[in-house]
Image (cartoon, rainbow, N blue to C red; front, side, top):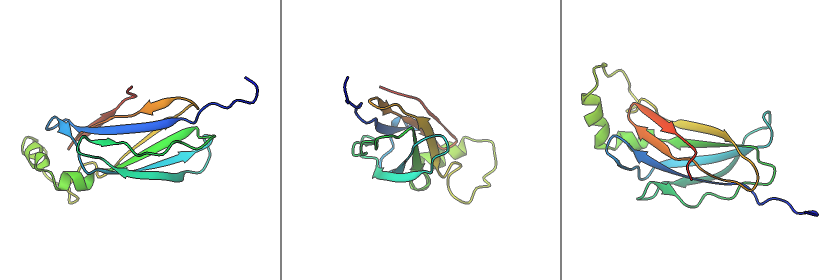
Amino acid sequence: MSGETAAPASVSTHILDTSVGRPAQGVALTLAVRSGRDGAWSAHGASTTDTDGRCKDLPALPEGTTHVRLDFAVEDYFVHHKATQQAEEQQDAPRVRDSGAFFPEVAITFAVTPGEHYHVPLLLNPFGYSVYRGS
């Protein structure tokens, strides 16, 4: 491979609200990138989840990217979603939050390799979340 460089890495994501078993629509997110473990973060894109809970317009990552951070602004989603109230009513813990969301934001950081695609779904509910590398 004389002088060929690998295609840049790419990222996609979607959010499923597991408290209602449906996609989480209207969640804003930002994408930041860095080169090297000690590199500075640089804003690289932003999007909002569609009716299927997906962001289909995230830009390809710049050459040299080694780490990606997705920041999901979930507070507004939960403040305006009735599932949160239903979930809170099922909890034994007293309501001590004033923000309307136990997790007002979720930040996911992961390492990337050039030429690879990374699909990173967020499974979300009012009191917890999980992520994984999808396909």
